[in-house]
Length: 257
Image (tube, rainbow, N blue to C red; front, side, top):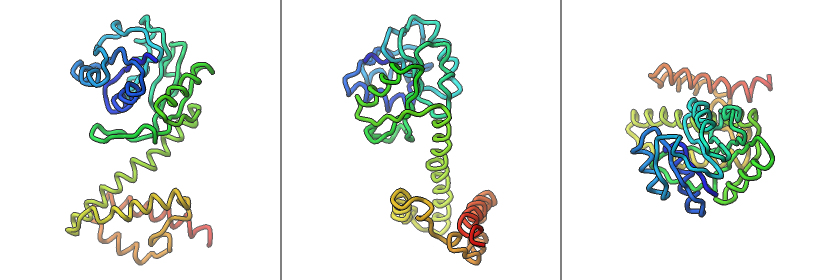
């Protein structure tokens, strides 16, 4: 396939490179910042540009930009002669944001991307949606071409998945920051928690989160919970601790009363 890339950030980079390695041609990388466009274009043998008027024709134009920029990009693409599928990579943005383009699609990788981290896209599930069956088939083929798994999901399903991903990824990461700060206060290495965290995730997917839960709130040990609260100096973190402990208590003990 010929695939134009709109955007030059983490998602654009982590998708453009596997596409190129899989044999797809990347004619053009468009970004608001020509320096960023040149950087990605050099990695995939593409032409960098900042102008929609310079976009060549392609089979797919992948819009990997911030969510709030997608409608403006879609409108700009509709004014060009680019005759292609227009696909965005957002989990939280409906496919309708790509109107008025005729062939619309979503190609959402359910993964966290950072510039400094390598991601094996073969392990990444892609949630796809399209305006018509032929376009959906093309998106499925695109995922298969990089040995990735594609799951068909409508906008409502994808929106719920995006919320679930925040609970499963962003919130735990923030909680790990709080844990790191407590470990620093205790003058102990953060790495000490790694086996515990890795086992927690493994058990959650093996047993299910409901059965894998452990800890003082799961046991109904309010004395330990009260001692923990007194050790937390940061009021925001204390509120989070109390809210999560209360939620666990309610999950496992309110139903038994």
